Length: 268
Image (cartoon, rainbow, N blue to C red; front, top):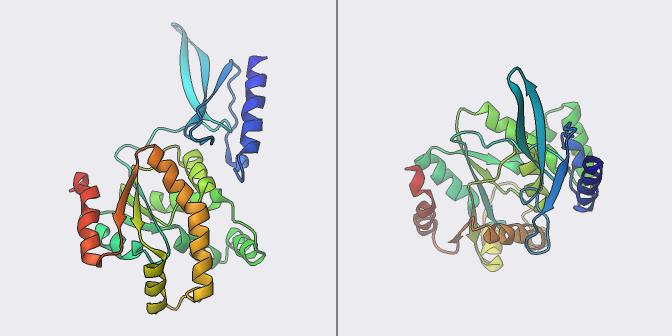
């Protein structure tokens, strides 16, 4: 009875989490009791800090062995972090210079650069049934489930021979981050945050010529608002975990990279 009560508690907690994709979870098959524990930070519940214990008894020839699993709020079993797998989330407003610095890191530290946006756009153009569905969702103004983006990232990582990854422009919001932990089973090593004023970013975006149709003043300002409202809270969340390495991105690209390298000394 305690199992069903706790599972109900986990289910309702998951439903309260805005935009959380519970359908991607793997239901726990444990018939033993589950003790639900919520750890809240700043009034929010995260996939990594809200968890349950599941103690299972497995019969063996020599007796019974009791084991403990850690599962998150939607009862998705947390997988151990892949050995020697390093993931850095790279965040910063539009025009902060993330792409330029990621190229430098790839060159000098043997990282693989993955752009969540580029993977999603390529998926939409793939002509597959799933890609067409995502394209239609965006056309209809609907939000693409975070689990879709996360699976594209994980597939790209699995196809790579690298074990060092820069994930550019991700997570864009709390739902992205929760979906990553749920699907991947582990969190990033740290968040590399490029801090830049909107005035400087606007100037840079208007001055570049990359054929992007969203680089006009009105669209750029909307992107700034989205970043402030959705991505900045994610950075603040990671700051509470001590995982943010912030770099002043107003300086020249060379100066910014000198500062960036301080965060990658462990990978030399």
